[in-house]
Length: 433
Image (cartoon, rainbow, N blue to C red; front, top):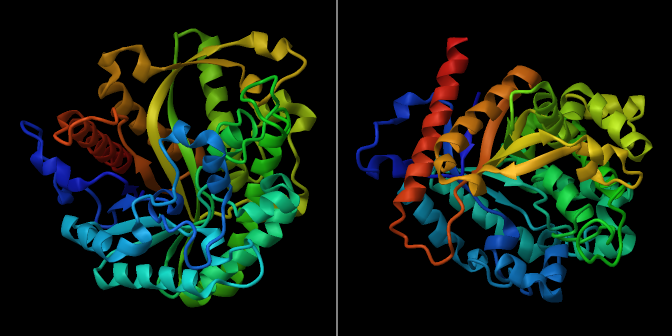
């Protein structure tokens, strides 16, 4: 098992009274790194030929306060990438995961390449390599070109598969001689849920009867439809890479999901079964097709005809289309069974799961470190036991803090140290087996 952390190993050495962890506690192929996304850090939203993504539209339509601003400037990484890479080198990072802005590279989503956008990513990748830092590239991080959303609805249309494949073809051709780790889509499960069911992120599609005040969408069907097309687009990209580029470039293709620590509210069988159901709906939704070629049986049962099906050809294409899984982990939930939701005729994805969720972070301060770190180890064990010995990269991890918190934040340092320790424990347990 190989992992990459968004957190920084150097914190381990400066936490007072903490037990010692060193590089020797991890396998030689374990990778410590940092992770960002294009919209959050690049800035230069209107410079050098870039056109809007769905996040630009969303943040400029009165939603910026929900996420504390827009990405017009971000961290100004477009102009300061050399300084950023030098800071990474000073920290001793092995790798840097970043995403490519589709609408910077190909402004209209398809058609001509933007030469200035292309040059920026060449420059960034070359700068990383010159400092001995592995580039790990995500090709879509929630920021679909607005032109494709306007033209045919983006991920709710199967037309996205062709355009996504053409886009990643450019990425592989231009950068694949130096980039060996490709993630097609970031947090497909979150994008499908938040963008097409509850409508709190772009493209903000949902049924008003369920959640946010959306002007379009269908929460009963579109989360499943968008996810289905993400899986087909990923599989198409993986086939392209393996057939056209892998023999020369020797790289790897992965997919990224948000994972959550799920803990039964009680020891009764209903809550235990509900906890497994929550795992199937959040992780199995994507990972079961990517590993075995089809959706979990419980999803087929609860969602019925609203869940798209794979043809035999599609199933074979999706099955085995990942070389690694990227996971993001932040928090945990207590799960209780909620059978009443299944009696409702009009249901969305959230009601189909038929569970109650209680966020452990809000339940009690005693869960601040112990439960979170234990559940990360539990997630890793679950993935190993249910999905084989798949290579795993922890792409994101961190602790939520108040915006005005001091930088002298021992709480976050302890949290990160505990997380690193839990991963070391998971690796030791796996090795012992």
